[in-house]
Length: 138
Length: 247
Image (tube, rainbow over the protein chains, first blue to last red):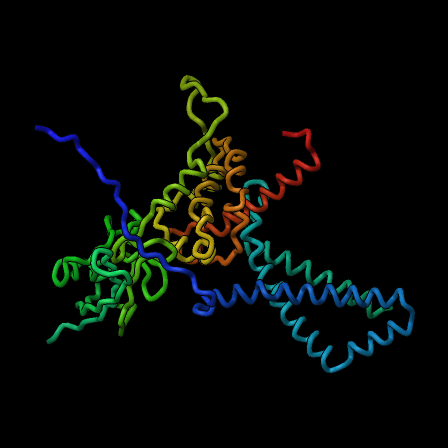
């Protein structure tokens, strides 16, 4: 007597792991990545500070002077120094990554990644110089 | 003269015997020409036949022997034992994948993701054979060639924290493979692939950690492929808003 063939579906007892919340502290490259992401907070800080400065312009000379006086306090100086360093880190890391996203061709020739990053740095330098000139010559 | 040895701490998971994995230490000869895969085969042949792992070509072509060595995903056939002196060398299955047994991971999810991006040449209308070949210049070939070097070893998924945190993320190799076809001058399927890859589990999950490209044994740049895809997707969106009458 023959029996019909019966197959049982394979159900392996899988072992699964979960990523720990501090997965990023184990490797230097991951710390670098998280730092780069966190620097966005300081970009936001600068933007908000600038908006507050603009608001004082609508509130007269007194408000503007008071804001400038606050900017010279040790707390504001410390905050702005940290923000500057973080934003410099933000800009440098993103400029270095720009060639990953941008592939530019001139005819048959592909512009090398270094040149694309270089163009970003050059733009940064030119804009900074123009702003410095505008502010210092006023 | 006694043979120099090195200790291998190997991840063991025997589902019929235990619920949690353990580490088992094996002492193996430290030979100059041996890679970690040779040491694993030595264990299997000479010490413990129950140790289970995948391997095939032993020359960095098949992509089967990827494992975590001291926490980094590598092809064990390309990792010389000598570089891990004085040891011990910790060997684990590829991270971010379910483990079936010992060093063997389940790759069904990865295989499904690969197929989802339609990795073949899509043409709107097949050219009759009588019209001859589809010609391609060396520059056109260079556009996609690096992405065709992928050997599906899954090291990039193992290195990618997003793949670990968001298992639905379609992942680096699948997106690089999609890009391999998008950039092929013979292909006309980029719009179809874009529909799949611009979904929630597609390119926008990537936060550009960049580890996928760092661990790739074939020099493919999946991180670059994903960022280029993001640029293309953004351009598509703007085009559809500014020129809704266009194709």
